[in-house]
Image (cartoon, rainbow, N blue to C red):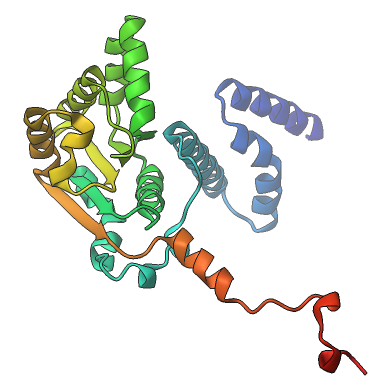
Amino acid sequence: MEKKETKSLVLLEHHLKRLKMPSMLRECEKVAARSAKENVDHLGFLLELCEIELLEREKRAAARRLNAAKFPTQKTLDDFDFTAQPSLNKVLVLELMRGEYLVRRENCLLVGNPGTGKTHLATCLGTAACAMGKRVRFFRVTDLVTDLMEARDDRMLSRLKTQLRKLDLLILDELGYVPASKVGAELLFDVISQAYERTSLIVTTNLPFENWTEVLGSERLTGATLDRLTHRCHILEMNGESYRVSDAKRRRRRPSRPKKDEVGEDEAPL
C-alpha cells in the first residue's frame, strides 16, 4: 500500500510540474496529511489545493503588474497627509481609489503647486488599479516624449503606440516642467488622442490650464488636448504648501542644542 502511495505521489508531482502549478506541488503533501488527520474528503482536499494555487497566482500576477507599471517609488494612501492639502477633495480621492472611473474610462487631472503630493497620489491610484487587475504604466511626460521621438526615429513608433493602447490606465507625471518641442508636443497629443474614451489617463501638472501653451507650444494643440482630457474628467486641486518646504521649516524651528565649547561661563556645569 505504501509503495502505491509513493508511486501516486511521484506521478502527482510530475503532473503538477507539467501543468505549471507550483503552489499545489509545494503544498500537496501537507494538505493531504492535514486532510487525512481531519477526515476531509477528496473533494475538500482538492478544493483547498485549488484555492492555494489561485491565491498564489493572483499574488504573482499583481506583482508582475506592479513591476510593469514602472512606478518610481511605492506609495500608499496611509502615508498621504490630507491635512496638509485642505484644497484636496478627500471624498473624491477615496471614491477614485475604488476604480470605477476606470470602468467608465474617465480621466483624472491632479493640478497644484510643486511638492504637494501629486505624484504620490497618482502612484496610489495606479497601485490600486494594479490590485484590481488593470494594466497600468507610469511615465514622466519628458521621458514619454523622449521614448516617442526615439521610437519614431527607429521606425518603432507603431509598436510603442500599440503597447500604450493595451493599457487600462496611463499615468503622465509632471506635465509642465519642461517645454516640449513641436514634434514632441504633437507625439504627446497623438498618445492622448489615441487614449480618448479607450484608456483612462491620470495627468499631474503644476501649470494652470491657461498656461499649457508653454509646454505644448500651440494654442490649437493645447485646446485639442484639453478638450480630450477634460471630457468626463475628475479634477483634483492641490494648492497647499510644498511638503518639502514645510519639512524644511519644521527642521529650522527645532531648537538646536549648544555645543560643549559654546556654553558660557555662567552656563557651565558645576
